Image 1 (cartoon, one colour):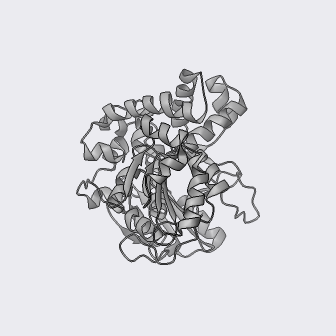
Image 2 (cartoon, rainbow, N blue to C red):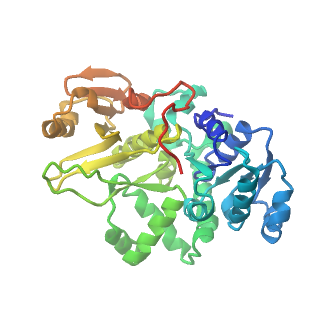
Length: 405
């Protein structure tokens, strides 16, 4: 197993809440994490038809089969269990009694907000971070390898070629999971929509354009974006509200959680093809933004990550808001730092008066530098952007966590 940074945080939260939940995309390692973190717990997969039938037809009898609690995998498949779990944890008052995992954000949050609010700690587990991959001994000096190979654990653990794994993952997701969330009959149109989204990664979301290109209505495009969000395929990066008396772009930007999945959707079949692809910069930016999310989420913290763009086109790729202190980050795929890379950061500093310590450039090279315009950070050390922003004991456990659900 590749050790996950979230493990210490999950174990810690299970000493404080009767229910701990790990949600995230399929194949991100949720089940493995839960079973490694709680080896003494009984385990039941609600993907198994017989187990699911037992839980649905006789929920009281099913839960009584686990008198000491259990790990319930893919809990969204049996939403009626939540009400029965609430009753049990209210009576038992044992921390860490149930550990739940799930891969559908929408269904889980709907049920949790209705039944388990205040009783459950929720963590979001994304595919591996570059930190985790490096710690496991898979270090590489080529960012293109991660852009093509992606960061799903199975690719590393089972040594599966990404050009083989991702098309099968995408097909399984479309034919199976999409139907669980919403019974979409036009699967070919949805697959085309997914590929159109891939071509717009790192760009402002334009639902009308997406709908027109796919031959669907604006409302259908909006609903399908929600499905992709709920399944942890994409996320929308929101614009920051700081305006400095300027008109701002108010629409979010679209990103994919995993660069390997994104590359596959774009039809990239080798690392060599990726190196000259016209969207390489967008794919690189997608990976870095996702890495910043992972750093925070793996420590049980809300991301608080945004972008900033005014109506004149001035833009900062990423703003990290830490207790009202904004750190500006520009992202460039090039391996050589040139003066033009600092254009956005220089403009931002002219508006805000920020110190160079609060501005950073993450680029595709391997050197770390301190320059007058800001910190230059290698893609392989993205986490150093957060230096001094969180208090961490080195095990992934944040000593001053933000409040969880």
